[in-house]
Length: 281
Length: 199
Image (cartoon, rainbow over all chains, first blue to last red):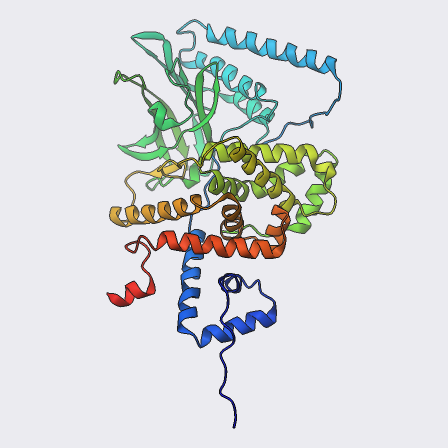
């Protein structure tokens, strides 16, 4: 008498999971497939695992909050290098000195065009202070190399505005872009300094900072990315691809980039400034 | 979603990076920064911590790349990052809570957005999935992250973690079972087949 067709042995949880990933050898893959085809319970188990894997795979890939970079020269692994230590100490002292100098810049010396000098000081020096771990550049920089970032910003920061807190002249909101006019597919470099902020957080929400590119009452919110806290001055910035902005057509036109800072000291005071930005067709 | 396996391209770039070509290494950073950051993010939870780990992994890889012989760059890089994640936990850092905010750096104003309720439900589903991953122990968490977030094959995962293939298989299966169990506690968001039939 012919025997009845037998359902292959019930797969383990491990086998079902690996079956899903096509990570079983071909014989086991076939055995599990045969079993699942004839077993509602195991099919339900497999469906459950598949849905779980899909739920995890559906998590969006997040964009890193900053660009990663490495120093130009690899760190040398000296066993004994007192001269190197002395050099590092000298650099550290120099950085501290530069930092103190920046900290004591007279209030108001950075009004509008002058703001770029403070700005350069902050951004240009900040990565150097982190040379041990590698400099950090803003999100989506064309190249993560600090030198290039500095060179570009130093050469072209012409569009700047500063507002001073009337109740605290040491507190200023400084906003600048690298240019005033961009092609519709151009990249805009934005830097915001919160000088004298009561918080050193690089989270724009904690700082109460918003950035909006506005035209005719509509616009896009730019999420400011914390770049560096230098001398306790939180600095935000980044490169923004204008082509990716959901602007109303026609994209070309005159906009204003507005920075609003709700000072995080519970006072409810707001500093606001803006710079013009032209998007040329 | 998953990065392509450009091992030939990697070999060329790795060869140049070994000779001190930083531009070549930068191309490797560009290629791997998103998957590496996301691996770290799903492991430690807090974006700043994940970015620190990714930055540190790239820096260590740059400094040690001359010691890399035959092993694929990708597995080696992820191994460095995985070790940094374990260091992070050894230092007593807990899984951070990811800020509940938009992840894009540009948010449209006055443009069509999904129905607010749909968006809220999708956000809640994602939060539950993130929480269920966060509830796993570190060994299971990294196995399932490398598989289902980074799309790695089991043998690649075994190379990253330095464990036998059977261990990878077992950790992934157990991790999926635990995540499934957690998610099924929320039938409104993750209905089982029985729930669907009952309706």
